[in-house]
Length: 165
Image (tube, rainbow, N blue to C red):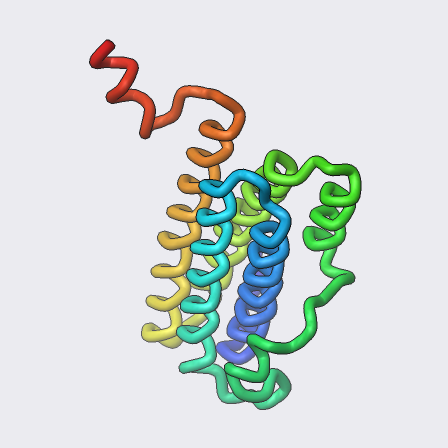
């Protein structure tokens, strides 16, 4: 059974997760060789910044400092997903592996944010988590479509092309 989170605990978890995701996407974009994939990764990093801003609006603690400083703070190189990305980069498995890791990360975030939303009583913050769940599902769908494109699979954006032919 899930645990009920205090507002501050839920926001701390979310802020850390969004920063880790932002750093992941920025790093993956920095080494992407396929321009389309790089742009998708950059866009995702920017959306994580937007999520961070929403969480910072409600967070009352001080351990992260101000938003600007936190955004510029060093990457958590001990984050397991980030470590897997660095390994994939060193093995020259760039875009494909980065997208696979991103899919797993977004799926985990959907579960985490769904649980956090259920455990937060404050309706305003609950709404923030619920909105982020929807946006994160959008991230997952976008990454899945980019992965399909990168791997030469048919995806939603290709359906119209194949149907017309």
